[in-house]
Length: 166
Image 1 (spheres, rainbow, N blue to C red):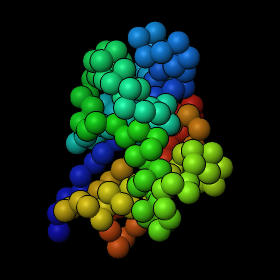
Image 2: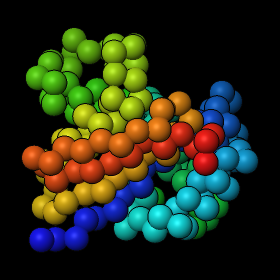
Image 3: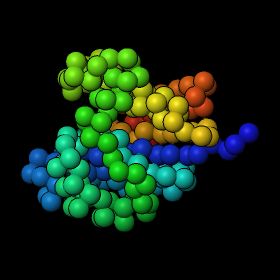
């Protein structure tokens, strides 16, 4: 039996940075970022990734990568191991898992019917199908309820953690 690969996913807005209202160059860390860093130090993930609804487009992704990712990695003490998904990437992944055509699923559908936690769980079920070994995942977010979940058929166990309750 393989040991589980531990992957921590972090939300951006209101979890580690202030809302991005003035663009990525103006993004600033918030106090909860220290709480996230402390959680990561204790949990010791093999990888840290981003799972956020703040990255709407490829242009947003480039802005995040050039203006926020370098200082965020220094602040958290971990490199971000994989290019973050855009909202459209998340919609496509969830649609695939739910056997829906992505053109029929809008952002408001995603938020209204699944929310951040539900979208994350669908993406982790998909990740489990692609992954060779077992995965232990956690999403650190300000807008999820604390929850544990498991997808035994694809080797995924996970948690949703509300950072405001840490």
